[in-house]
Image (tube, rainbow, N blue to C red; front, top):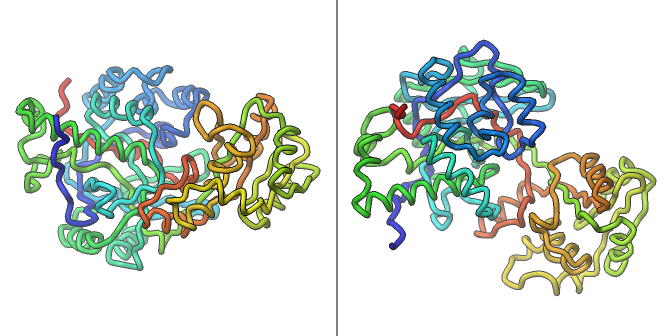
Amino acid sequence: MAHPELPVPDGLVLRPFRGVRFAVDDLAAVTSPPYDLIGETGVRELLDAHPNNVVRLILPGIDHHRYAEARQTLHSWLSSGILTTDEVPAVYVYEQSGPGILQRGLIGEVALAAPEQRTILPHEDVMPGPVADRLALMRTTEANLEPIFLLYEGRNGAATRLVDLVAASRTPLVETETGDGIVHRLWAVTDPDELAAVEADLRPRQALIADGHHRYATYRALQADHHLTTASGAGAAVRGRTGDGAGPDGRSHGGAQPWDFGLALLVDFDAYPPDLKAIHRVVPGLPLEEAVNRAKTAWQVHEHPDLATGLAALREAREPAFLLTAGGPAHLITDPDRRQVQRAMPADRSARWQALNTSVLAEFLLPRVWGTRDEEHSVRIVHHDPEAAAHLARDCGGTAVLMNPLAVDDVLAVAAQGERVPRKSTSFGPKPRTGLVMRLLTPNPQR
């Protein structure tokens, strides 16, 4: 069957919705980091923190695939009042603050757009496994349980001015401090004039997906599924649950359906520049000595006595540069043979893409120097923490490949050209806390 014709939004649209929020005393104890940053140990710690922690919804069951259990839990919490649905649709102002951190933005339901529409720009490719997992969860729960993270160039527009006004002068719906020292505050904006000003300001703008590529791909897959079902004439049951042409607030939205939107946090990066961190690699089974000796065929190698000294040198090094370690001494590799690098690069990629350190890693260092590919089954990733990467390398008899974070401008420029950076190139933060506000795709979920 042909792919259905999907709606095309007329710009960057962030709609109000009826937020679903926890009605518990200790809000910090029921929230969590995004699902893809929680390991097995983290799941157990969150479960121990509170019997109603949101991890029961986003990663149901220790095997992470008990989707029906998540649906049952969601409906049980809604029925018992553990979760409540706000009466009035709102766009939510969300603030994260802490030592060296201040980020404010708007949480709403964003109109979904294909990459070629140039409204919402991805900068990374996605893998089918995580998309299939999130799609099964969204289908079963009929909910968006955590927002994706979008950045846009606001230039102190009306939306940003409203965000700052609300945060400075109004009492929040929610205020809680999580264990990492971050204070989270949430306000509901319901005034029609304020919402209209936000809508007018955002519509001509363009957003970058900072975090949540797999969830955004899942939003669009769910949207396509619903439109395909409707087009085939078998969508009556689906339409009957949501209301024909009605959103989850029960009101008409000009024929737009709930699955034409997805839960998102939208942040003006002019006003609140993101914290962009590196994602390190560990190559199991590649001993450090062998990695260094092979690197010498194309790179300048500088040995440092310990990790801290090596990291300091890495921060000052001209890109591309990498620090190789397995604990103990660290080896900084710099100034690769330019001709060898150029021969390894895909000819159809821009010069800016080819200059990214993650591009050099994925196209040259790993495959040409070490004979492996930057893939899930052969290379492990470690977010942010160089010491954790070094420990993992030591434990698996491999080599940690530590790198500097990409520049935000480079990521934006590559995405604006329609290109994608190599996998796991970026980690934008601070990421929104999961569980502060959720979104139902159906106004009255079936029990």
